[in-house]
Amino acid sequence: MIGFFEYQYLKFKKNHLKNLVALAKVDGHIDDTEVVFLHEIGAKYGLKKKQVQDILDSEDNFELTIPKKFYTKVGQLYDIVGMMMADEIIDDKEMEFCESMCKKMKLKPELIEEMVKIYKRGGVQDFEEWEDFVEESKKYTVE
Image 1 (cartoon, one colour):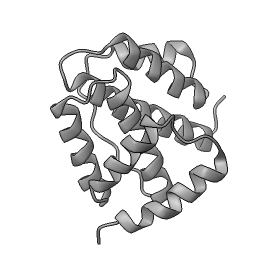
Image 2: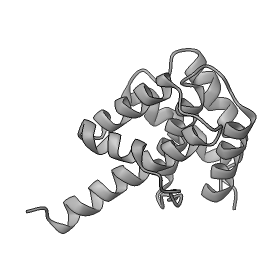
Image 3: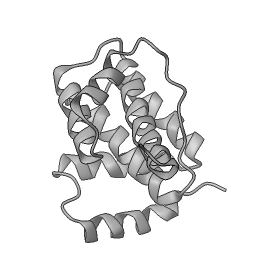
Image 4: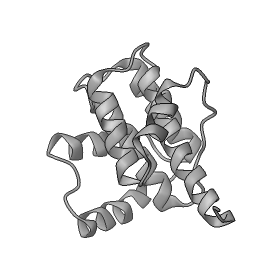
């Protein structure tokens, strides 16, 4: 039996993935590299392949879920930018999606540019680098 907190965390992980799938679908198709990226993120969160595939196969239009904590917002946006770049094509619709997520998260869209630069040089390499990046990201807060 799954407890309340385990259920809440599972729901959080699935919502995170649903946001990524929403971006992947925004340009009209999901590229194979995007599918691989989604499965990698799902595995990182401990989701089973079937759970990830069920989200991918869903015909639902997912309601975007915005995290409450700053750290989680930056992580979500970082994964969204990674999804945008998975096929190595930055589509205008995908960029608009990322910018709209920034607005909803009360973050400046310039943060996307910083994340794109990080992905182009190979992504965040370790926890310490990630912590530094999150701290640096606070300057992109809108309030």
